[in-house]
Image 1 (cartoon, helix red, strand yellow):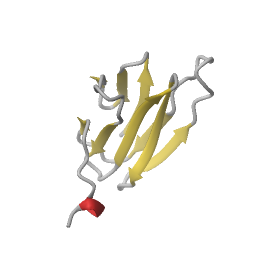
Image 2 (spheres, one colour):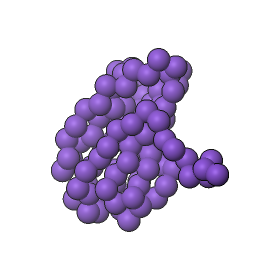
Image 3 (cartoon, helix red, strand yellow):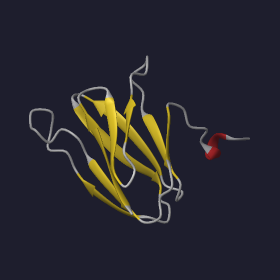
Length: 103
């Protein structure tokens, strides 16, 4: 099973592959989105200066590969992350309770 995660336009996060979904991301402060995947992977997704950037915050059990975006002035304005492995769900959030901040 595999999925590909990328940004589209300036407000959509797309999941393609064995799971297909589209999340509208319009936070009031232009902050990042977070995608949690059932294997334990946590990704940060953010639209910055015309480019979608995807960062792995926590690696889960899936294999992860990433294709970097070329830039805002190209057709390739989004990082593309591929996860391969056992994936049952993907959840979207605009906040993340970072465990290192807990007291």
